[in-house]
Image 1: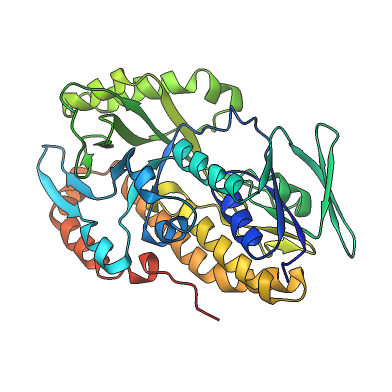
Image 2: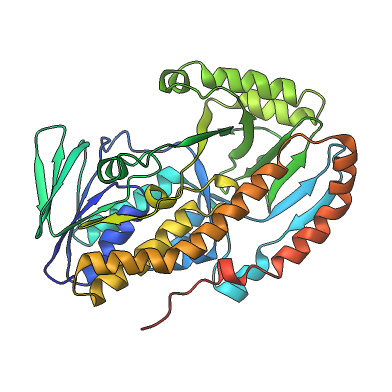
Length: 393
């Protein structure tokens, strides 16, 4: 049972505060510890949130506030000659699922969810990098790099794909695999693109795809994939990698619509996140410690489900912790309830990622003529993804 229990949460991204709010509403005492400072926690990237995630978010924050600075989730696909070859609409989602896919700045989403947690009385402690964990029959204790210590009845790792919690409880299960793909993008202003767009424009260019949309604030948000055989070192990501990506993309798109190169040049900064696969974990928990979100099941960004899956996790875990007598029993049932859905979405993301690679002219000819058919076919099969509802107990 949650009431009266102290829950330590590691990570103040999206799922940590969402989980804390739900636990607090059930009588738990949740406290969040974040390794970064409050000023440096702002993420530069943007992400997609689909109806399954938005319907959970609306329990904590005003979606209209988020929508003010967003881009649509609908996609229009174009071939290298600029001809539209397919559409992926989202308008039907509002009526069918109660929410419509959005692209949101991660920094805005994180700020809103942290403010909602603070309004519920949840304390977020910044500059607390976890260094080790200790468990006994009754408690779990977290030790931080500033010398502080926190003890509780359980601990939840919401600290992402590079999870320190995962490293602590499963030191032999941390072989992240670099996929030779870097998710990249940026923000820009362009005189031809001052009005909000009704969809993401994704073009399959001569040597690679380029996608962009214009936000409600008149800002161009663009994204792309950069293939790099050698995994970038942390110091490269902070220094030389972004300019390397800019120059590479300018070369890749030199024969495509000149607008793409103009957007890339006008970007004040390039966002770069190497994409990793997390090996499937036999267990997501150990005694009084449990992983959730990317810490348990990292997913590539190709289907825009990372944040939505983490939000689903928070709903299921909160419910089970409220009904089970011991947290380890709740953790076991949580993994059993979530693993099948998570694995199916991870497989889907990998397949979509493969389609963004450079292909030969014959394959491109078939893609341009068949993509519309496949998208229409898939839209009719997405209830399992977007229509997710946790069973009432």
